[in-house]
Image (tube, rainbow, N blue to C red; front, top):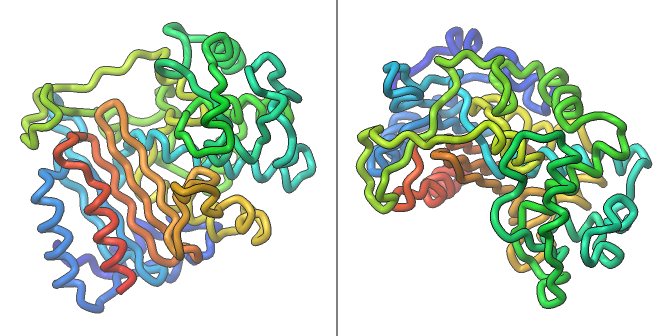
Length: 359
């Protein structure tokens, strides 16, 4: 990786970290062992035929960043540090934080029952907000979330409610089901009287001055900086020919309410997750309560929570995203790819790099 001098980094990333606990004027290249570190990460990425952007932060400093491959192969647009990628299920951590904020404001309680908001959901009189945040509600939605047409948020949820099943065997046991966060997004709208989109803009995009974050159905992002998702017809193949574009319908971008409908750049994603985990969005007590390993999976509040490692990932529509952050937000790894292949799962790479950062 070519070295980037402090002045250039300040120009590129000067206000990236905004109101998080990482001050803008401290963002600089870490000069300790960068040659060795860069070569190791470059090697790991080359083995995966990586297409996307990687950002590594150590002690609040940008240690490594790179972009490889094409955001749009047909137009020959290359991925760069401003490219926005679908973050898929990583969005759940942001939805959880929005919900916890309303709990801080006294508009909601972790002990509130789902029946208070959606009484027609099977098992709703037993299910708490806490259980939904931790994927322990027992709710199952056969098939994908949402109907096959564009509807309002509440209409999408009502359509899903007709298909929701409640499992007594899974109740209070961890079972990953995105319907939990669709319903939590609907609850957010009910207690605030505002749309999920409005809340996301207010608490994240506007608050942190995010320049490369938008909803998947929005047209505000420039096409050159909004990545297209790719995969292979055979997902086991590790080839990177960009010959199989992953299509997505407009209704799918609405259906993934609160669970996977955001496009973000690597820097914007780090900025938001740092703000949630270590900034002033939530109190220390709220973070301690929300981000705990609430099950055998360590899942809680949209993250998998281990000692000094809060991890989230997303996979879909030709994209894969992974983020690891330390509890204080000072060390982090963000990996965003627009060429997903089962054979080239990037989760082990992201974890290996995060371990290298913490050595």
